[in-house]
Image (cartoon, rainbow over all chains, first blue to last red; front, side):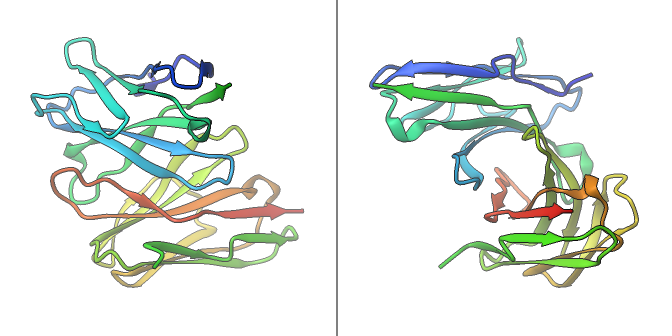
Amino acid sequence: AQKITQTQPGMFVQEKEAVTLDCTYDTSDPSYGLFWYKQPSSGEMIFLIYQGSYDQQNATEGRYSLNFQKARKSANLVISASQLGDSAMYFCAMREDNTGTASKLTFGTGTRLQVTL
Amino acid sequence: DTAVSQTPKYLVTQMGNDKSIKCEQNLGHDTMYWYKQDSKKFLKIMFSYNNKELIINETVPNRFSPKSPDKAHLNLHINSLELGDSAVYFCASSQFGVGGEQYFGPGTRLTVT
């Protein structure tokens, strides 16, 4: 079974609008972390935002916020006021804390976001 | 200063050759990783080291051998390269604890011909 599911292979949004990128996850570990990364066409992986499973509040970082719904096992990324530079692949990832000292990230298949004028 | 660096950025080689990719991080992190991103952009963990000790080995062929001379460096050596090894290889590092976000290097695009 997929541990991280991103059902939107591609999304379009107009500049200055908000967009939500979906992510659902599957784990039986009570302690885990959820991450979003951005990969522009230049190829680097850029860390955007983190949400811990025990965090009571949704994480926010500038124009990025994570809509964390634990019961639904979803961790959607919301980008407000989209900019042309937001055009990129976006990956959701999960770290399960039962794997010991070094916790690997399991990634989803990504969503390609295109911001239009 | 670059936080996680990798060399080379591009690597083109023939089948059967042996090649290495080097990674260095100056973030003071205690854990380093190698990930492989295939042509469909899917990212998968290969190895992880914590303080020079191998922690994760995700059923990678033994032609791939990571080496960590110290906690700031994690190199990847690949023997007898095959066409299917063509991919982008990312090094990453993190500090175990709350958050523990992983910071990635720029990637090495390996093309095997």
